[in-house]
Image 1: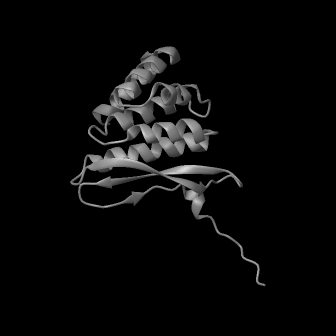
Image 2: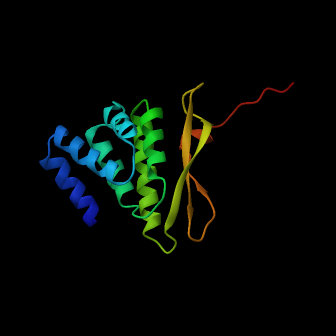
Length: 152
């Protein structure tokens, strides 16, 4: 278990949901998320206190990465169920792992209007630039579902 994982585990077992919310609020504001976006994420019922804490600490580990607030805004605005929250947690976790590698992340940006796994809904998908690679994009696996085409 990594130090971050251990720290998150300790927080989740030792702190109440209200205490976790206060810790997460402070961390989000410190990394540049607006007060409005912070509260929207913390009040979003798609995120359990565990999801919120993991998401926040993953983003917190991206020290020096520009525009983390864009991901906070999209997560708070667009997440409507647990699958969305898990996507945000796992994506931020992958970003955290990549950031620790040979080519750290430089900036997070959002691409609007990718189809959601729920018909008719749209969501923003995060992408980032690194000091080496120009672009990487994260999409939920549901985006790659088979599509049936009818022949004319």
